[in-house]
Length: 287
Image (cartoon, rainbow, N blue to C red; front, side, top):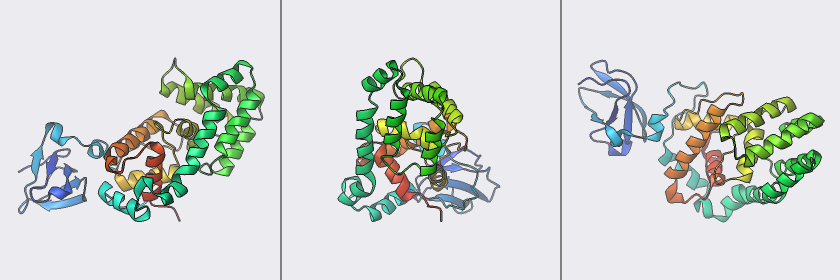
């Protein structure tokens, strides 16, 4: 039987391997397939005839976004089942244990509470009306300094960039619009804030994603570039990462985060704080 690149299949005897996608046209004797729960396998067609699947049965978020290019990182694929096991070794009580809360959650909630106090919509709007951009800068820096997840040199670059009065004004307006803007979509608001961060010399992924994540952890994800790239390699989920700030990468990261939120339903994640913490735990770290 002939198998074509992109065909969705199942192994006739290994249900535990899950759904697979054919990576290249079969050569008559063998076929290469990526299975969601087992990674890449080469099967002898003289021994095994994979079962073709179609329609709703053939849908899978990982395969629909499968990262085809092998990364120079050398990180091997790890199924989500294996990743959950890895996470639970570190945090046996999952997202609700005391160790997890102390290590990963409580301090981010503290930053969320501070952002809700200092940069809530009504207060922020009032400060903008008074054109008190200096106070907005002060509050934004307090919020970003509440955690250590943004490197200090990136925070210093933002602080120094906001010494310029014009940039400080643009920052205040674009940050408010990023968080609360109603006229434009998130893409336009993201790109406008990115432009201002460029003027400030602070256009880095942790900076642009921090305020959305901390203010609205129910919807948005924090981006640590190396961790996110390693996670993409580990899960073989394509996020179209580019070091330059761009909407496509952030959109794909949000989609990946939503995928994990749904797949981790048995662990009952509350928000993206839990998903970001899970990502941080399972992603291979740099030496």
